[in-house]
Length: 166
Image (cartoon, rainbow, N blue to C red; front, side, top):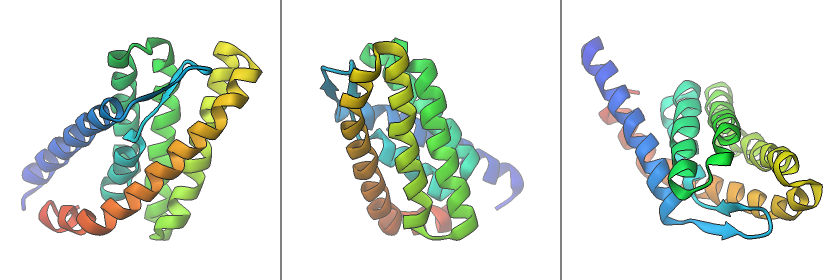
């Protein structure tokens, strides 16, 4: 595959993952009333993109896909925070996987980072009590996203890597 085709495939895959992040975030969207946020499985797509395409794609898929989902779902106040929190979640997963090639190790830090990032966000937006109340649900979301990403990566990751020469 020549360099132009490879670049085109990467752009298309990036757009696909960002779009899937929005869809999976909104399709499986469970509001958390006491924290003004919501539980979703968009993290699985962000983490999968990071594992398949690397840290830069993980960052941009997490940032753009998740922030767009916040906007569409009516949580615009979260958009700038989500851009950073989810972007770093994807970046960390992709970077750690590129260094270790171990799925579980690569996802532990992002799974911890995401709820900590939203703990700080909710503390800033709503106060410490709301932030602490939302933390377990955000941690659960991270764990479910990581487990789902591992399952997806083991089943379809090799297809992406061979088909698109990633």
